[in-house]
Length: 395
Ligand code: TMP
Image (cartoon, rainbow, N blue to C red; front, side):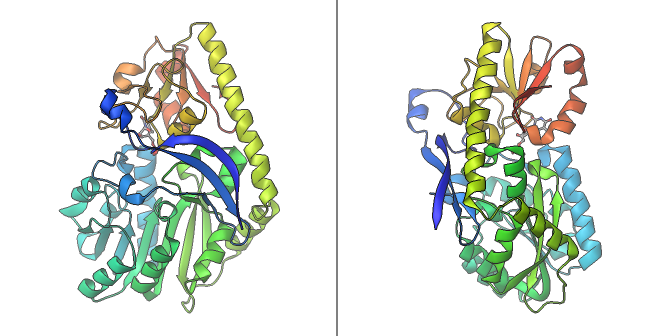
């Protein structure tokens, strides 16, 4: 039933920033074929051959959710909302990163699950933290220790990262209390197709979910999707509210509307993804054409934000430092390193954003508003941004 619709070529792990460009380091660089497929039976869009999570979520994991003001504020807001609305006694987060969501709760009630040991270390002192992969075995272990079931399970940008959906949802079903709720946030397939944001596909995004796919999926585990919210984070995501089959929550009108929207957009049809694939090829050609032209005029082009998404764009479009002189990123532990596969140096924006730059490719396009606000001086002095979302455009 699964059929490939998009081939993004040989790709490195989006998170595998290189320490140096020595031969030994380059020889060790890992690549895989990034092919994306659609399953017409369950409406799931996924990477055809996912990478082993143990090589992705290591003790060197670079992403810190707290880096962005947008994300800090978004997590604070949803933490408050869930606390007020559902008044959970015990809260658990699957994929707690640096604790950006959990730090909004008091210590007693909170369980953190984070397999990247460097990140788990950050929350360990404050919360009960398990530095392990989420699966049924861990669910049983927690239940044995904890004795009580969990009232609120939150998981942002994590469920879509775990290849084994059975393990994810069987574990969740095990620890969730009778009237407990599971809240999942992940990039929205509708937004990806609408915005042509093909760079949402990289090794960690094993799945890009639609609401119609989540609805079908959770039924397999005697769970029920009862509400969904379209949210703006990560370039357009969905927040799914799920409960046990017999729990008290009623299916909302909002959910029915999103269902209609997705079916009208034909997210249940292979032809939709085929058309998307043609638009992706055009985006690649247009970007290469623009950058080649600017380079002919000796323009200095850099990239803004060493994002995982830009790993997909750079490797798919084969953009190296002949096009992009360097990438700026605020994350200390990305600075001084090189982009995966394309080996472009990453430096601090304090050094890299100045009036010698003509164009900055918006690698972190999902933070466009925050960035344009922050970089008023760069824009005032004549600096420009290039975005590829939804079409190649100069800002
Ligand atoms: P993400 O899209 O995977 O969250 O990554 C965003 C990256 O962009 C992260 O490494 C931080 C970086 N960034 C900047 O360098 N400057 C900024 O103003 C923002 C918002 C993000």
